[in-house]
Amino acid sequence: MPAAPPSDDILMEPVMRQHAAAFHALASDPAVSATTHLPSPFPPGHAEAWIDTAIGARAKGEAFHFAMLHPQDGFIGCCSLVALSPRARTAQLSYWVGRPYWGRGHATRAARWMLDFAFETLKLDRVRTCALESNTASLRVLEKLGFQQVLRAPNRNPKFSLDDVLVFFERAPESDRRSDAPNP
Image (tube, rainbow, N blue to C red; front, side, top):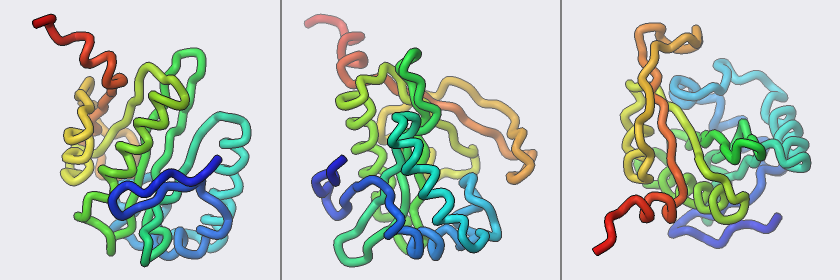
């Protein structure tokens, strides 16, 4: 699978072993793991093992994990489609960006590219995702991308504060959304 063309200042390519050192360095930041499923502390060798699993899942068509690459800085984060269901034609969007690259629109651009991949290449009907209600940056990304909130639920994951709420979203392809518009 070739790398995606640049989107402003990032390039998307399938995650590979060559990304492991930078992946580990950025994922080891407790601020990154605070709102993601990345473990904290991030164990030695975990990036390599995760990447090997990601490569295997991609080969089977079960998940697609892409490295976000900055032209000068290299690996800056990861954007994925997981829980891929060809039968239901759905997947779950997941992403994280290393703290030095927060607030620059990288997550929005990467997730927008991933939605294009999901709807145009994989021909999915829906992409779902969720975020902690306290993760306002991620909620803004999802709003910009046209995700619609479908559910708020108590967090059951002990990694996060049990007082925090999970907000679930979904999005259909643009053509589906346009077809709902009234005819002029």
